[in-house]
Length: 267
Image 1 (tube, rainbow, N blue to C red):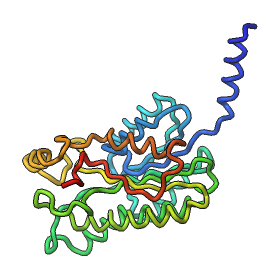
Image 2: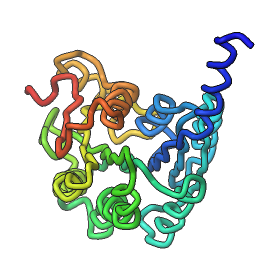
Image 3: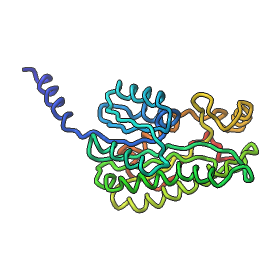
Image 4: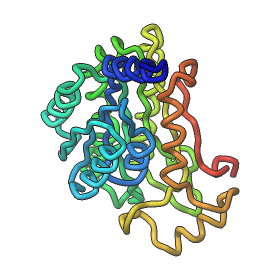
């Protein structure tokens, strides 16, 4: 038997014993979530993906990831419901027995101003973006501590920083994202002793899938002209940073809120 053949056989056996990385991603059916799955998909990854109702989009993302060799579990449900979150975490554990990394991407933009939004609007925003994050972390925190590659990445937003750009505000989204960033930084401090990194990404205006957008076409055009790089962020721009933050190369970065906004925050 040739030496190269021996190396190939040994390599194939070693691969079988390499543990797959288990990654839980919310909001995975479109946009940044979908782009992140496509960026991370490989034979070394086991995904658990969820979205509230876009089953068609979620299945499309699942099939792409499986084509790349990843194992994928998926489920649709409302992450503002604690019962569903328990089901989601249990599903994530079912394949590998542990959750190594969590990407919190569920969210939406709401531009209703004071006097226009009500208690239920604000509560829904906080439940979806903030409380769901804290509940998932509480459910899988021991998994993250045990992992050799424990990572948490939170997708936040510019709306709680660049207030009033183009005369627009997003009060209830800003409230939820602001609280989410506070949780991110306090969690990063708590988990640092366990060698788990926790970071947030704050995207600027990002290209949407389809027609679901809080802004009109004319509003988008005006905004693009004000962004220093003169374009919207693509979901892939954010996914590239997520990929880095999950990697070993980013093992000394934690507690950060990193802006990916084309220079929007310079204004």
